[in-house]
Length: 212
View 1 (cartoon, rainbow, N blue to C red):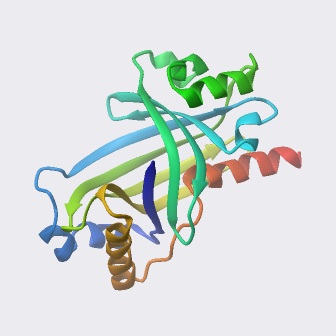
View 2: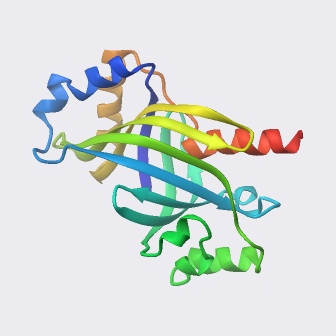
């Protein structure tokens, strides 16, 4: 399960300030700082059968890597996001344009998705690209990855900005993650981001599509 906190970041100056925070630097795992350009495409059928069943089908370029993901059962509140997920590395760059659900055929959820699609073709419904600045921290209670994402969500019906912080739990207890988030949010006056990037893009794409 993926467990992470999301917060809105109002501008690049705030982003830089948090990345240079002294307390975070004191618990940072040295050598884990990294910047990656990420580009993701999300796929569904013409009738949006996956999103109607709370399933996201994503293919993402992470630097030089290409990873296909299924995410489902997004729960949580007030900026806390908990999702089931399965990730599969892929080698064929064509998957970014026309992926096959057979990518996930070895997992139970993948088999369920294949049955749900029942041969219906997939199409890209939205894309996003962003620069991710990240590093890992160890509080003694939890090991987390803190990421700053700066970029854009793109749909056929309009775009929206990405400017957010994610703190993902790698190991330890959820309470340790929450304490990290609370401390940073209080210090910098951050608001929780209650929607995932996918949910924001989907609302724009499907909402506009339904009214065209």
